[in-house]
Length: 118
Image: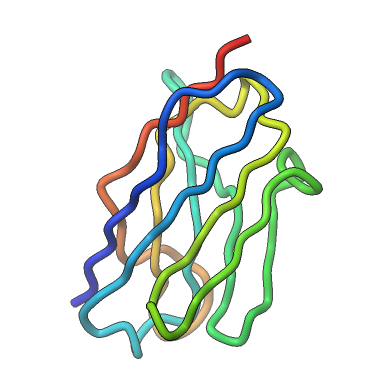
């Protein structure tokens, strides 16, 4: 089993920055990829960014050039640096961990709220 704990959400003005953190514990050897999804009110949960154990990254088109995902293997922590934030980035952000293969989410964190004011 894997436990994921997010931190770093909050309220920021448009154009500002936030950094989210996700600390993993448990059977982390079983995870191929970690990443971030988000869910805005009335919308489906959507992929934001992923990073594999080998360091390969993938981003949603809507955040490319503004968000950066990274990982610290020694701390079993994944980060999401969010710059040039827009009101449409407002959502609950969820950390996810995949299974041994692929990118399908298997584990979820509890979510952290990000609110961007205009």
